[in-house]
Image (cartoon, rainbow, N blue to C red; front, top):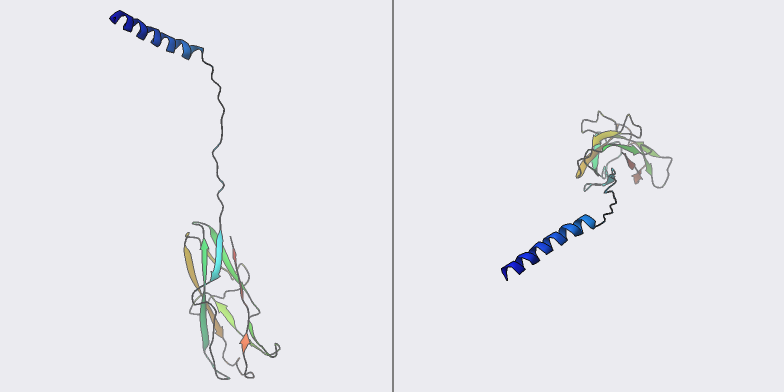
Length: 159
């Protein structure tokens, strides 16, 4: 009986080798890939619009600020430019205007405009980056008729 079990074991073992030697193989290849892109989003921040509030005619030292949020993928270089008429226009008569300037800093030294020389540049962190936008009306520019004055600014992020 022992001999029969041993013989069956040897036959099973040899047939495995024979099967392995006689089997055919066929192979193919395939790729694993992904495309990585850069992305930036821009939106008005929590402080949002720049509002000088209600002022008296001929007021001086008028400053205000608003904010933007930009979110770019980590390491993505970007530039933000601001496009506007740089003038608050009377809602009843667009020919009556109050000129103003937008700045990147609270000291009102770095103009924020619509050219690459006047844009704000940075690299993305992968999270929201809040940015303040400072505005200033030069003294003597508010001697205008009473009314509501507005302008629209378009913020563009280029990456």
